[in-house]
Image 1 (cartoon, rainbow, N blue to C red):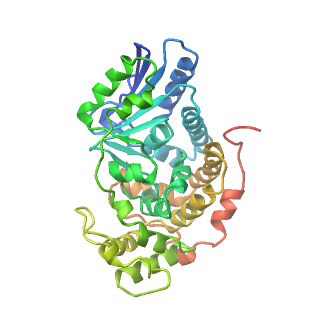
Image 2 (cartoon, rainbow, N blue to C red):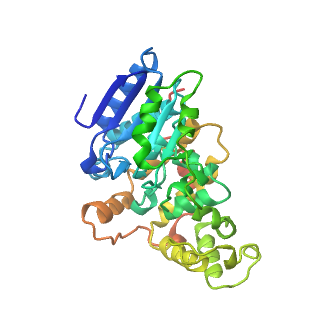
Image 3 (tube, one colour):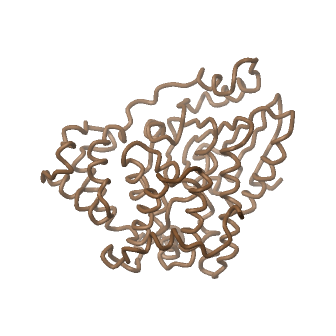
Length: 374
């Protein structure tokens, strides 16, 4: 076992921890392979009845894939190696969803990107008051993957499109409302959950045991915003989404916005008002990669028509295999992570310059061996 993964079995509980707290437990290729080996080993181990998956430290479960590793792949034209990374990661994510034993994921703290791939497909997903959940890929000129498009597509109404395009961060209440989590447990009680799972007595199932600790996290700002988000983000293109957000923010009535008056969005400590938030959302979209936004919108909407997580992962694989070769991904990581100047220079720089047929073409074109060979 490496220094970045720890695993143990006791009292019927297989406990695996991402142990890279200095990097917010970001996933390296080596970590993905080791996690895969552990889940394979425990699949038929009679000593393991339930698996608990968590992260070391108090700051987060997993901030995502190792962005610097991805940047190295992209910058050095190691595209084949990058595809191997994604294939291995996606197979692990799908394995967790179909695992024959309950997997309890503790999404305490920051859980983003690749962390969603691990925890978001587990059978029992727990969030806490410290949870910050997001698919933030558009901020680096990329697109939601690791089955993120599958989860986003299932979110109520157009909330998934909003979460995807704006890379919005969810708290516990939002994550449960959007379908990214199942239960809210205060962080101080997580050790008691693990203890109860080890001491469980039949016929109590792991899900029933977790419910004993489940509390109500409070109102969801996403739920409160549903009317105007649906009205704005149902537009057919990103450009038209921005136009509707501007119209709503400025109080201009349109047929699409009549059902979403600003009074339908009560005051919230993180969102001072619906119109202000809509204006900020429009401003934000205009700073992000036009290419990433266009492809992401198509990806989430296509995912609504797919039959399984594996189908969504295959679709995402075609997208990420294309993105790894593109300027905007390298530039986005450079601006946000490497140089940290927060001033990416996208190419093309405007939505109008993006080929309208690009997203469909990239999604439909299978240039490389798939994640799961036929």
